[in-house]
Image (cartoon, rainbow, N blue to C red; front, side, top):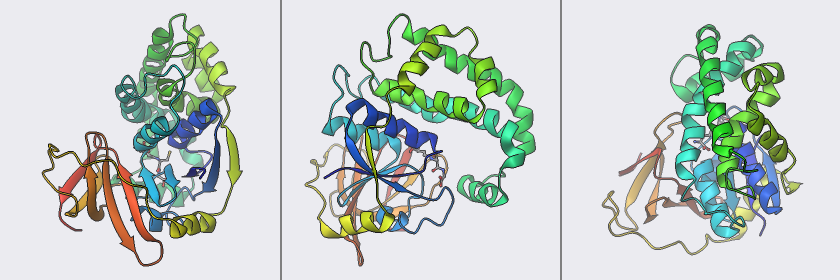
Length: 304
Ligand SMILES: N[C@@H](CCC(=O)N[C@@H](CS)C(=O)NCC(=O)O)C(=O)O
């Protein structure tokens, strides 16, 4: 069964996953979700989780690019990649610190072109004003930081073609996201902020050539009928030492700890060091298993 990615083309977190499909050369199905709410073909699958990307494999649904990369690596490890062991820190750096520098750099310049509906949606998502003026003011200092982040990649590469070594790996995919986003959105700013970072530029060109594997477009309705037609895969074992202190079958609520904190409730299937799996019995789609990372997510006993 090909994995199904729910995403949209302009989404940087989704690009991180698409390039992993390119690295493995694998076939995948693409469902384009809207970039603002509502997302009627996505939220029934995710129990309300709304961010992009989401990976669906039958009736198993992986929320957050961290859980997605983890799962893709488990299914088809990249040759020469040490797996997630060396990646998780790089991944969280890219998702949080580097991303938080990229947002004001991009919206500081493009904010005045941003549709009102998008701004209203992002204010609801973050619980804070999407203040284009403040982002324009922050853009100057953030450009300086952005170049600092980019220089970390340049330094880390040294003479190697990829961060993972001779072949690209998950660390490359994580580091790629913000580079791809700024280069695509503001090519002149990108050129200014990466001037002299020659290893980075050579790496960027190598990464851009990787592509996205074999993408087949399907509709959201088709993806929902896939979920309806199968049961979730057998889950991995529950970790009895887990700090949450719950047992399989207990009610649990999960939410992101940064933005898009919609609480998702279900029944605990397994709590593991790097994965929390909860079940939902849905009238339309039957049983679903939702997979979340642990770092970056709050899990609590109870119901919403
Ligand atoms: N930590 C999440 C963050 C995902 C994220 O922020 N995605 C953005 C799009 S790139 C998003 O969902 N924005 C709101 C939306 O598209 O509805 C991940 O790694 O997947």
